[in-house]
Length: 553
Image (cartoon, rainbow, N blue to C red):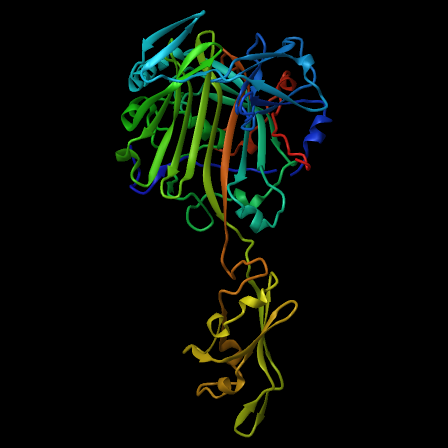
């Protein structure tokens, strides 16, 4: 399946959720240790860095700003040190006692990346440097696909993870429509702690009854901006839609569909365009090139960039990304994929998944998926009411005489007086089913309305004019006037946003089976409807809620 239609790509979409406002200082006072991981050279964030209590499988993942929070105390079974690692950086250990509670702690990682010199790869072995010929990029990917079953655990296991989904404005369309002066970073934030049970690599996520999820916590975060109008279902027609994206008839709640988009875990199933079936279609659909060698815990990892062939993606789209494959055992550590609309350079969706080794097997570290969508806002410049006013209507011999005939038109916003002219182009009055044109003499802007004066002599001189029925037969149309903010009448504004769904693993349990008598998550209904399981150790896992910007930042 290379294209559902020539002009569409395949993308999974699902439910959205809710959230208001707290600042970094408030969070510092809560007793948590707040940290930010930066590149020591560029000072840019090291996004999705892995943070582990040294010597354990327990920890968390920094967010897309390199930020994370830790409990201000440690449990007896955790270490007094944390280890911070990320592909392309040297691993760093820090004692928890070095972190302060009264500030955001800055942790800097030193880059550990080796650039290629033409076709030669320099390997690190002690103090010696050995040059070896660089292998073909596609050959490396093919070998990695062959070894998926070897490098991943086929026995049952589980992991406890922090899950969240939220929306984020792409441009200033949200601020303009909602008239918000502050920079809105997170909308409708939902968070939870879940335990995902995997019956073994390669088993079907939906059909295997041992592949289940237990929900331990679920939290609609009221500390961030909440806007329920953005949570309406996708219809791809009138209200909420994805540009040039085909919504497949696929069931599943937010977390379920996020799991399905994990192309590595579901390597023999359709995931998303243009990876499609990862094991069968990935290499045939893309061109590959080695970009360099990155290191993780001193282990060399090929960094391979790729791009979808035009015969697969079509001329309208560009699909590209990076895959990181270990040099020694061809284990896939990370896959990053984005699809863009070529003409406008707009990203339609992107997905990143990272795996980390535990006891020589690869387990999920995190997965994040986002897609662009648009919503037609109900908050637009429109007419609230039109009132036809006729003064002193009476019979005088053979014709009617009235002092004035006019409309009072009330709007939901103040009218820009300069946008009224030219009157003959922006106001049109017609009478009866024949739509005979009625002249407009004047338009006056008042404090709370505009007054549109009709040409009474011309109106009453119409051959079919009827004094009793004319209020029901006359029509006034207005177009192209603006409110004082520049919004055009009856033009429904588009709000452009990204929808994010993310899961960050906090602890892995190799060879763990699904227990009996638990409340499993319904994979086909919203996560908010899931039953919460009792869990004695739930306080050992926490919500890595994004840090709010300080007002002075």
